[in-house]
Amino acid sequence: MAEDTDVTMADAPPPAPQDEELVLPMVDEKLLEDVKSMGFPELRARKALMAGSKNVESALDWLLSHENDGDIDEPIKKVPKGQTLASSGPVQVAKSIKCVETGRLFRNAMEAQAYAERTGRTQFEETTEVKKPLTEEGKKQKVAELKALAAQRRAEREGLEKVEDIDREKKRREQGQESIKTKEQLAKAQRLREIDRIKREKAAEKKERERLRAEIAKDKAERRARGGRLAGKLGVDGYNPSIDQNDDRRNDACPTTDEPAPAPAPPKKIDLPPPEQVDKAIGTIQKYKTAGDGGTCLKTLGAYLRNAINKGDQDEKYRKIPLDNAAFKKRVSGLVGGIALLKAVGFVKDETHLELTLAVRDSNKALLEETLAKLEKAHAAYVAGAC
Figure (cartoon, rainbow, N blue to C red):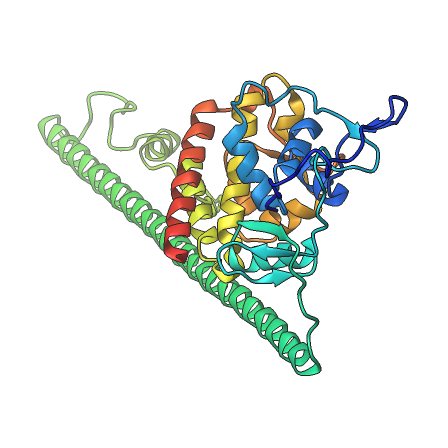
């Protein structure tokens, strides 16, 4: 809100009594809790709101822009109870909030925040202008606009879910075809092994028959030479070899088994490498166009990773994300791809405390930095496309 600089000493309020209670300047407590729940210290969160941030998006912008300021962690100067930070001069009462880009007026911060989330605009200021109340016709038009927006979001979500269902069905069919192909290959290999076994058995039988015929012919020739008698008892090398030996030799050459062929192993699920999982998640998030939801999600994820990279080693709270936080549910977990990206870079779900945790031993700083760069690039492209 613009301040009146033409103030004389006569207009200034009298100095506060020495014993008057000093307190921190007043801010929107609900908005303060939302910013703190995203992992930022209360001191910095208060400074962001005192700087004029009217919603979580503008508070994030201020915190990211001033995180390296030398006085960012210096204590906030207290003021007399009941006065604002600007109470050293005449305080003008703000009667509405105005969008700097469009000039549109809002009765309170909640209306302005809803408008910011719907349009992606972040520049607002307090003003003494009074927003005229809606007429009955205006109220009906407003209700119709809200219903249309809700229907649009629902259709967008259903469309995205339909695309993902098609992708899942396509993958299921591909995996089924791959499974059938694998089974056919295993069955073919089994048939080839069986054919080879039969061929080896027949070859061994033929060789044995030829050996027996040769022994018989040799015996006949010897009988003729000795007047019908053999020189001695046939040994194991004669034409009447041991059946057991013959069987043993055949079994060694052509082993058989009654055991069934092993069942084909099911195809293994192919998991994408973490960088590719990150790319897939970012691509999904960028599809959310209504009210700038995709851009908000990308920016919020960037804030989480930046905290984990820069401060996670000193304070473990920057490596934890509460799953039941309202802002997290609305900006990240409510969009397909948000939690998938966090899991891809190492965050693990803790069922006991209902939070996502990035353990130090599991932290891959190179992957985190690479993902942060991708998020910043994707957010810039998203904003450029929305303009």
